[in-house]
Length: 94
View 1 (cartoon, one colour):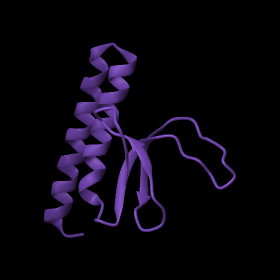
View 2 (cartoon, rainbow, N blue to C red; view 1 turned 30 degrees about the vertical axis):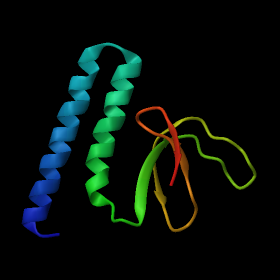
View 3 (cartoon, rainbow, N blue to C red; view 1 turned 90 degrees about the horizontal axis):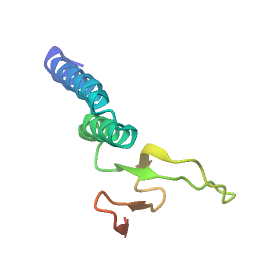
View 4 (cartoon, rainbow, N blue to C red; view 1 turned 60 degrees about the horizontal axis):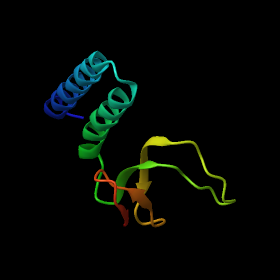
């Protein structure tokens, strides 16, 4: 990775860490957690190409076992369809 892109990535990471620390000041566990999810989403999204996407929710394995809540799930759109709750709390499928 050349120094220009490394510098940009480092700046994004520093901003993300600062935003995550500031989220702790809200003193509301649900809001703090949601803000940290948004920070992580904003950090990772620019690094994904158009074959990958992100969502949040629960994951079902091949045996039908449901996971606990997953804050950030990166998945390949080419391998299998995904259904997620959107940020505006409406169901949608991709």
